[in-house]
Amino acid sequence: MTIATGVLCALLGYFLGAIPTGALVGRLWHGVDVLHSGSGHTGGLNVYRTTGNRWALVLTGLIDCALAMLAVSLARAWFPAPWAGPLAGLMAIVGHNWSVFLGLRGGVGLSSLTGAMITLSPLATLACAAILVAIWLAVNRVLRHSARSTIVVMLLFGPVMWLLRQPTPVLALGTFGAIPVILKELGDFNRVYETGAV
Image (cartoon, rainbow, N blue to C red; front, side, top):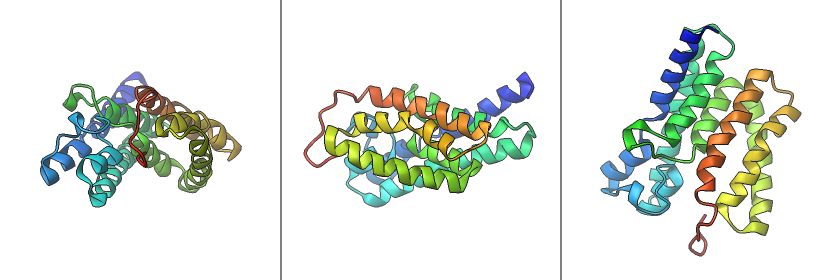
């Protein structure tokens, strides 16, 4: 893959991922600024926290997932290089987490990571997700802290995909795509959650 192709894939992924879905849903649907409410993230979970609307959570998560899927799909269609899709997917996560449209603020990136991975390897991603959700539930029973539990699970994302014998580009996206998620969750490492909240 040439430098020019890499730059184009990165820009494509970043700007699609940077579309601030959660901020738009919160503002247009409920008149709420999610950046200054709850955790301050723009992901579906904080949209739900701040609006109390489960459909707002679903809509935000689906759109964020779809934007990452679109980034990967377009990169693969426009550029034949095997790393085009993974690079665009990685940058979609980065764009979601540090959106240029929100002063480099954003979400945590789980929906974007899921969308990018599903586009490259749907069955393995679903299998990996099932394993990691089970691990998250077990870890969270011990830690009782969403962010810390998510960090533990994200550290296992790459190894689980490796155990599922994924090709190198998919494995790389799973491994490096988890890093932006971990970095954002580190900001919530000492956050005190309300009873029953995640």
